Image (cartoon, rainbow, N blue to C red):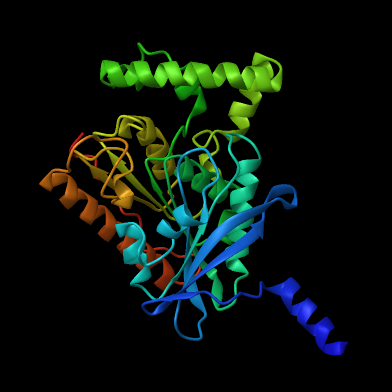
Length: 327
């Protein structure tokens, strides 16, 4: 009985991992973790060999739906997308998490719960937790940074979606930054933003309530809550999350004297930061320039987390100013 109680106590302190599949020198394990309200979510963990403690990178997928174990493996395992494969070459753990569909809701708490689950895993150093997300996953990574403060070490985001909901949902297409976008891109964003806004009004019951929710969840309006070093990966050719819509947040963080890194590609479509061979954002093969920019983005992610994990807690590597000369 005493042994059983000891096991239960240990399980409450840290998850007991099941045996996983050995892939190269890594162990890949399918897990579940409790999100908001105790709802269970899938996760996939890739652990390096050795005793630890090791840093961990939590990856957050894009889109707006829960993902299967198969998809999450591409976000965690050595055989995943090229960026994830590079992370697996480091002596770091990688955990891919998912979340319920939605925006400005419980999906944010699901992600925070997933990151805290990562911090509690055996052989993981809870003081060296990085978060990497793209698109909607980038939005959620930044929201996690705002909600968790220095519980995480650093956050890297690729083309983070809707950093300012007032511009995205209600922005004047005749005024910057929307007016600076190509007409087809601007029209698509305005149309989608207006639809989202009407849905939010229906969900909250009034325009006043909808705008209050938008203020509460605006990443740009609450930029001061992002305390940890942040890497932004954007592209001038991204039509879904144009660089110009992310740039005001970057400038706001720099004005707050936060540590900011920026890599801005010139020709890559949305999602380039993962380096997948097939992209829903582009028909046809990649160009040589796009492949070179994807590779440079991966190197930037590696440089960023390497320096963040090697620096003392509370210290980064000094502000790395944005590459904006090509704008």
